[in-house]
Image (tube, rainbow, N blue to C red; front, side, top):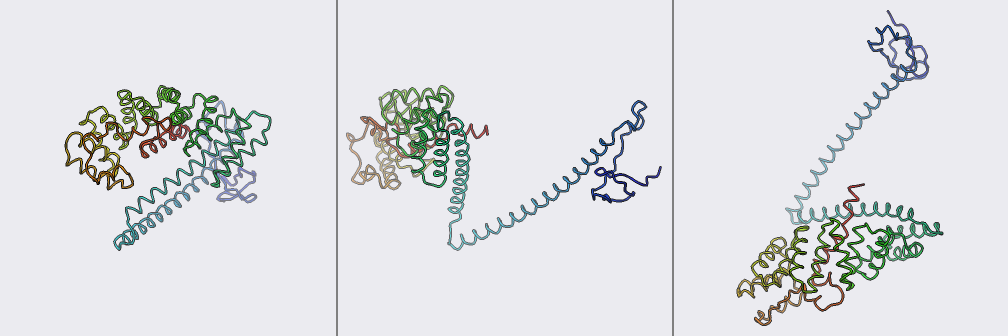
Length: 413
């Protein structure tokens, strides 16, 4: 059988055999071949099949062909872009190498600063996305009588935050919070802001409201516990922090704060258990340092020295750990190693008065402190029971506490 004409699958116009495009509408022509089972099936002969089904199959075949062509073009474009990026990267590395050899720049410092900048930009993008999601959640939770005013306050406040006008943004969001005291996301956001700023009294007030309407939020519970601890509410702080630990959020911040509160009560054995949990959750120079301080207080000098050496190995410029190591050696009667540790502490922390005092000579045996400097500041204090004593530990605790809850939400998103 010789086919002289075949029909367009779009407009059904007859076309001569051999054409690629329809004479009437310009559509690429497709040939549809019926399956062999249909041709030889005596029950359902080919004549019973609807023509529009064949037309749809032809149209699908055409679209698949176009999609394949576009994917091939996209792949080619990506390969060219990757090749160009590779050459650009090679050129930049060569330029950095030449400048480093000439002493114009330091390649290691440049790489470190570049990685830090990329990290900051990624964090800023994540924060912007989180803020947008939070804005929608805050507005969606409102059930008051002034939705328009509330929405305007929230939009304006978040916009000011994004523009860098933090103080004005906070004031605007506080006006929104006055219209919705039961809005847990808004109160949590404001409480977190004041926690970051170190304004623990304000942080405690807003976080208390947030926890009232969102008691299952581990992050709010943890931040509130830390804020209460620094405001001198030790019993409330321990209750909240233990609740966080019971929920399975085994974070460094909760265990460290519990250890500090127990140390303020001179319950050193219990404090040591909490600090060991903090060490297990976050092995670092800071956690080895705090464990070494407790062992020093318990007169277990050899174990204290082991943890303090580990802290110095992980960070050679940790002046507080070097100073404590000097005290351990001095108590053990190893004056030469004590002098060496005190000298390293002076070199690493020249702004610290207690390190400068060592220039006048070693401490006398009756002057060696029994309480490490980390705990001495909060011994008789009514506030700052958690963040006093060591800035590095306080910063590590805040960083860890603010990260709780974000990883799970990112994984879920």
